[in-house]
Image: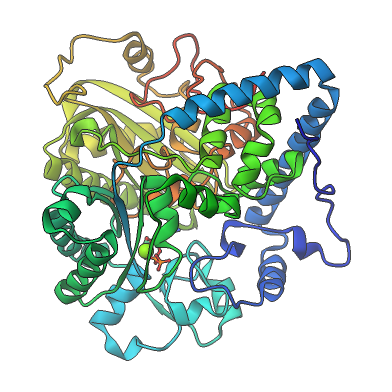
Length: 552
Ligand code: DCP
Ligand code: MG
């Protein structure tokens, strides 16, 4: 097993402190290749310095640095026999994972270009060609490609975006509009795969194996046709990626953005070549934290290096996390189509300028309840567990849950329970409220379930109707990345709802680390490394631990 050589410690260059200040919005998105990264980082640093967000980011950074140091120390302590043992474990696991490789399906990932911004431009053509962002001074949802040249991007506070690009035009968000266009795109997707999987308003996965065979067209031709059709129906452009699995298809759709496509052929050699130099951050589920840890502890920067350092990964991570990393190294991903009715939860959330104005907070909660209710009714779903997510002015993330005796789906019922949860926390200054509903009225086969049949986990949740002792932090994600509810990177395509989209789960390890930061006393009982599909709490504690990635 090779040595786990680590990059030099992340100590900041005191002359250029901004170089080590990375946030989700200093990470490049499509269309940001030529950006003066140093200038953006310096501006972001200078404008954030001293803010609560900044303090929180620094706290996280310090924690990650410490985690890296600890893990490096653990690597250094591994004896020669430990190392050869874990190398054998890794080799065996790699063979087992390789045996699961399925190259029989063709997956297409489609992602609309600068979606909200493009919709707004359709509505107001005078915006065309001018740098614009959707959102406001506190936060922007997206920026068009003209604005991206200045380093402006989604999840960036608007006041920083304006500093980077003084000409920037701001357009307020209008979710009804985006939902309308999203529905139009889905009608097109349906023609190519009736069981397509929507991952967010602007993004979907389609299994195009059948349509390619039936029409005797190549996957590239189908992708081309689908994109043309989306454009004809909506006036909007999109990009597509084609690959033998969903994980790779998503990576591929970003390669030729905007208005482009990339096809990765369905053969092992092509996949391995593609993966060999792919930066790990391109993979869904690997965000800033995981990237820092893998790079800082093991010197892993490309997907291929996951295999080279497999022994160390098996030594230091739980089996599920190590499996995830090794399968990334092999370019493996999901190829099956889960039952549509596997949807486990629906959620949405809103970020706004921090406020302690109770009337305003109630109003936000009412809007979220209404949106959630509409989405549930569209799907014919009712749920029993309602979870409230809050982010305080100082960026602390809290979650409170309650499980009801009966299933609910109306705006009034949702709001009623949400208000109880919120009131128990007030007075408080908040910058984000989210609502999630789960425990639907059907089992995994789509049958109606019996609400009186309580699982132990249900009992634990319902036993705490106040929600006071329930910290579902990890279930919902923590104060991470783009700060949305946490879902399985590409499995849980269920959250398909307004602001709560795919960009939620930027990081596999993040929630684990940051939950510690938030002083949650986690019960490390679930070793799945994935979101708990039933949203259930562990059996012996008041705290849900869904992501358990490190070995104790
Ligand atoms: N979105 C958001 N907040 C974020 C990220 C995205 O509200 N932090 C919204 C606005 C986007 C839409 O979701 O328009 C789709 O997200 P994408 O990540 O696909 O970004 P875009 O479609 O805007 O741009 P791209 O061309 O890179 O896909
Ligand atoms: Mg998009």
